[in-house]
Length: 454
Image 1 (cartoon, rainbow, N blue to C red):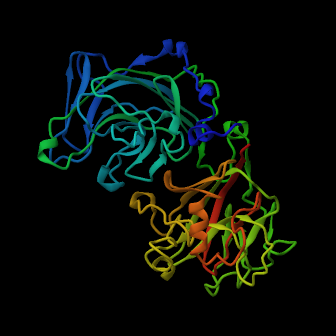
Image 2 (spheres, rainbow, N blue to C red; image 1 turned 180 degrees about the horizontal axis):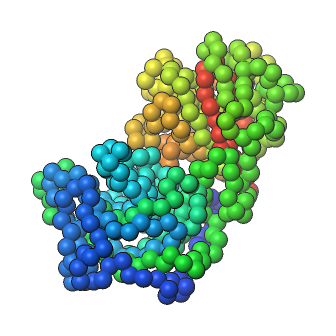
Image 3 (spheres, one colour; image 1 turned 60 degrees about the vertical axis):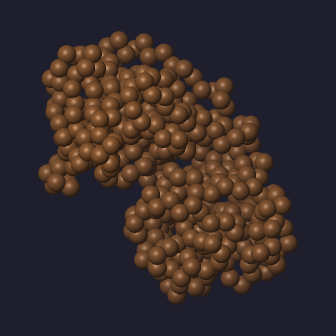
């Protein structure tokens, strides 16, 4: 795979985007009759929904929470198509495989959402988990499709829910590819988002041609966009096609060894319940089991890892680790920081926040995007991308929080002012191991994967 931009890595070559023909959708049935709202009901809020000129038109109402016009029926496996048009600049979405239960947040609608996002962020067709896990697939994973929506223009959308595979499309192009098993069935709902100011009342969105197919389902031909797979330690068929490899199988420590050692540590780490865990100890670097590294070295890659930290924990993922330094503590390498920013003192050290969560430790701070941070005890998704040309990006839960390029004047200046200035050519090895850090705190990892880039 040639490497020219982030879009090429996550969405493959631009020429590999396909505009699909959905002729098999002829077996579908209409969910909206074009005349009234029969088969639909209102949930959560009281935004206005009405039929206007053969469309379902939703209108924002000040003081109302997110409102949903939901189907009376629930659906499991299906292909859904619809069109939308924004009359005004407003956030919206379409719920699918969603639920409303009295025992969950007093009946609040929750579940998968096809995002409609007119903001400059342009995450339309991303997958958001409403009132539950938040972003599952952002368009940061597929930036070639980042499309700034135009007002008063119709857009055609498609959602394929077949088993654990969830795929979205916008105007015939693949947008998101998610593998998840949390909600296998539920209703479909049209969202009118809440508004925070009285002057934002009266904004409108329209939907039409809402159709569903529930039998004889034929998924769209495979593509090569990035896959978010939330099944534990699992590879989907498309991930395999993309060249993704598991670095942790959920049962063994195959492929790993202790840093500066030939074998995996005999203490300080455990494999349990499909997780690779650092066991809490003194809170000091490499003072218990010690760091672990991949047996193989890597030069350009997409490295994925899910992690869960405990209260006040400190850890990290290092890359371009060579083990050539005579170092008594943790092995040296570029580090994606893992930290409890609120309680661990390291967050206040360094410079301008360059030791906080997802930062390039002691060199570059991560963006302070609060929505990217999960609560202590919840799983986070980290991604490190190293391009063949030296560019590097750190992602946290779908948000790109920093980027830089190795070997630039700026990079060398940062190193010269850091704790790494004493190591010649720090971080500039052509290849190196990937390291999971034992910092003496309890941290769990799973879904550890890598895709090498060429």
